[in-house]
Length: 297
Image (cartoon, rainbow, N blue to C red; front, top):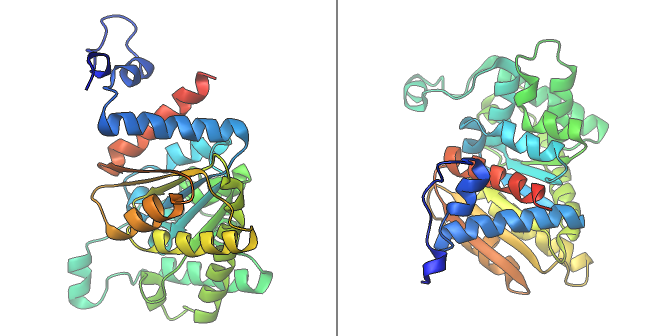
């Protein structure tokens, strides 16, 4: 440790987020947070990919607006999510609320049995299979076409479509509430989600030499899907992409994000980071830090 690395108190004058960011100690995860923000800003300036992967709690903790803002700024180039994130995203946009008491619903077999959510999403997948859309695109188009959407501005998938950012949803059959619904069509779920797997793989070559991958709150699905998509990209790209930054940000550490996001993908070059903290605090901090870094160009 060096004296110049220590934190500083908030100044009496000129209090701002920039001042807060500069006052952080240049030590451990505070250093990592600022470095990841710098890497994202640099990737955006150089036209490299910034791929963001989401778990369901990212949507449930109210973080869609900061992610949509980064898409509108042209920072995020692809957003991928697991099935639970897509369901929460749809419900929040469509009805203005999401989530339920799992224990209470499980007792009587009503957990996840909401008619509108199950029917409308499964109908979107069937239409997507017919039209050759991915699952993310299918959901975004369903929200776009529905006459009654409570908060379209809060949908990550719809925000991605409006910003011209590719999105993907990666389903796990039987793991999501909408698979319990009578309208569930396994062929449609598999077809649209597999198309999105290819879409994610196609987004990864632009990571080469300076891109960034952020895994926000997905402990299993997105780390596993990312590793396979990266394998496809490198198989077709003569070993590229390499030389990119990865960061796993979650409330607690898990094996798969550490191995499949932070460590293994960066063995051929690049850097991997782990940032531990509550999503509702750390994701806005990182997003604001990215915007601040962009303003310093």
